[in-house]
Length: 317
Image (cartoon, rainbow, N blue to C red):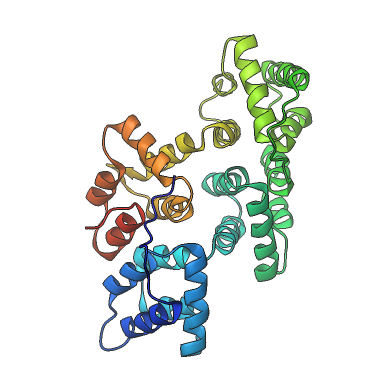
């Protein structure tokens, strides 16, 4: 369930564009007006506002936002204003601009595993249009070893999305997964083939059979070395397929903690999931931490950035 709240009646894209233009006029920027408009428009409506703004002002709305805003508030508004495919393409490009590190590996995996096959395809189209390269070649260039062997097929595949399940295949491939994990062959091509090509429905059947037949969940068997970054990525890959809300809850829990806030992770999850399943993630967060997500965010953030986050979480200050 999404947390985005769009009023039943909203102004025309032209009227919204005019109001946004006014928000940039004068001595200071009216950040509250920006939040009021953009945080209550879905992706299709935001796209129309961008077109109307460009027509009226001769400049992309994103360019104006970049000039007028700063810091974490700028990033959340910019990411939110982008369409889903453009946003994911930007996030993927940021993750591959430099030598890919552990957090960036997880971002690439997250995009590949929590989007539908069509959404991932559109992201790859947006990536090529903007950067004149493919996601696949950039991921391959900036990774190595087991990370490359896992991430390249993850971003390359177009999974079947139907509900059909081959029970015999599920049993066979559960056995293959168990054997490879027992041998600590975590980068084996058969293990990676199964995880990166099977439909989520088929994979769920395989993992259920694994649990029933061998007495442990596959993620538990992959915890032999808790500090191994590749095994962490493998476990998270599986969690993204089966329980995405639990994966995102953990990202948020680590982003909002006493040691300091990871604003980039917080912003990424809220902007990418507000129109998808952020309510389920918020419910999981409260179940896991005994604190409502909006309360935790409110205590850990401030100013216009907090207002935008809370609006996308479905709560107004």
